Length: 278
Ligand SMILES: C[S@@+](CC[C@H](N)C(=O)[O-])C[C@H]1O[C@@H](n2cnc3c(N)ncnc32)[C@H](O)[C@@H]1O
Image (tube, rainbow, N blue to C red; front, side, top):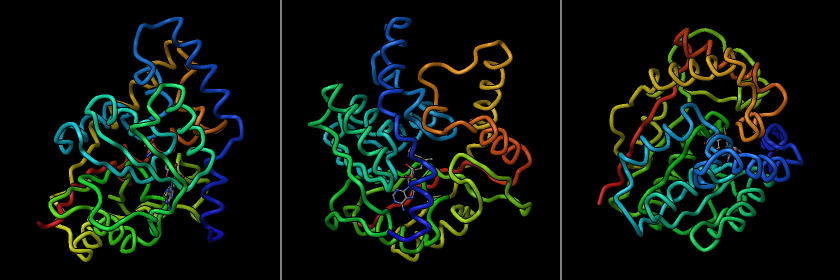
């Protein structure tokens, strides 16, 4: 692993995540009849818009059951569990952070989903999986940690089947101002590689994919941050299954910085779909 990648996995690791999530799930079950996959949505969808954003992305690209999906940078597997249970997909997830993969696989085993989802440790720029293998590739809030977008795009293009679609939902640069740190994906600029929608489109096109026009998710983001602020103002505090469990002790500062940058137009969560020719 490169030294910058060691920094990234250190940034995301805590050492006691599984116990915290299992305890949070137990507490959440006493207050709600929602399914475990839905209850976990508060902690395992580590991107702006949470489950709502995942649903919007999936509704655009997931054709139905039996779809083979690769989720790049799967974290603790929230998107994978949602795609497997809502759409009947078979999901493979890869992520650089061993603790996230381990927690994700343990949660899948707890929920009886181990036969439909397989998560493993791997680098998105060197994916140890076959060529032309997946109907869909999803990637949510991961590219900000990856410097070499050309290599990332080439790997996405390689593993997609002809006719397949990649759905990339990342925080992208839309203004010139310096970034504020920390943010949810990085402690400082040594592990942050935020790029413009045009940079992504150029890398995807160079890899042989046809990218659609980028879709701004700014309104979703502003509503998401506003809801979070309203919850806090109402004294809601941190739920036992909130995303702070994966974001760490400085979660509030990270979210405040990100929210301020989205409001100022410095960055914007953006969705790009890219098609592999038949
Ligand atoms: C902000 S989290 C998003 C996790 C997940 N996609 C989600 O939305 O819940 C970013 C994830 O990208 C992973 N990651 C960063 N660089 C990576 C790389 N080169 N290859 C694979 N995963 C990577 C991190 O370990 C982390 O789990």
